[in-house]
Length: 322
Image (cartoon, rainbow, N blue to C red; front, side):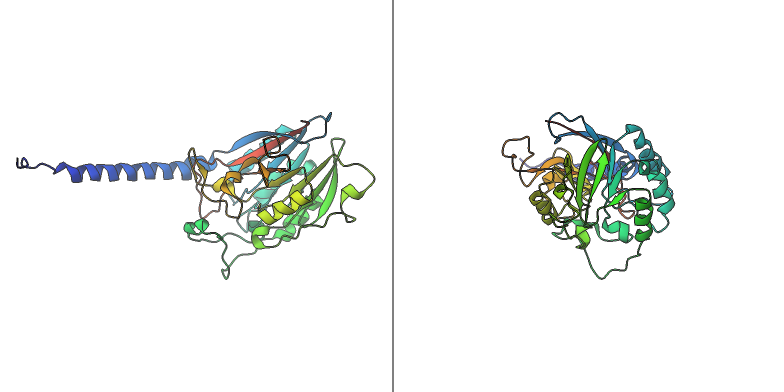
């Protein structure tokens, strides 16, 4: 039987409606990612059973990847308010700013935290301001590029400001802190994303574990959690490795997770608490692993101000006995 007149004429309209619906959904997702979620800061609270038996809990506030620019008053106020958590120790894993004129905003954000014991490392965007680039580069095995013009940021002044307030610079060095009656040794690296990392040797005069006084906790701190750095921390028997840099993938797929980490770390460890090199130490097969916490951070590059299914975050790590 021949087709009735006009039969099949609705197919193009159906396709057009489907494409229009997809475009509308994409526009809505972009609006959510750029206008809402990128400013929807959240505090993650994580327990890590890593202290010796019988010790009382120890609270560590982990800040990372603020990428501050002038005018981000809400982010500054939110970071300041985290001081009400009353942490025993603050760890800052870098990429604090993203603009030549962001020093006043950054110092205001960190001001109440600088009154507490703290330690820090720098990230690539503490040294140089970010530049525009094709977002598709993040899908490459190595998203870094060379030969581009960069604006150097006043990172030496930043280091001086933080250390003069009492925070410890862990860039390729070791140190020790007395915190809440506990003796904490720390080992850190400069930014591996810029190949500035040189893991400090164990057993030397700066290794607190070689002293007569016992150490209650050994922490590893780095900005970018490249595998070589995590391997060095694991070999150094750190109790907990702390890192940032990944932004948690920044654009994640709901129910799946991150697509990239902007380093050679696998996407299953893009954010949150995990283990290295195997499962978490409290999971089957993880007995020889090191605890690892990666923060998704609080900011983005000013040239890619979007987040999707990956809210900007800071973390309160509560370390406790098993």
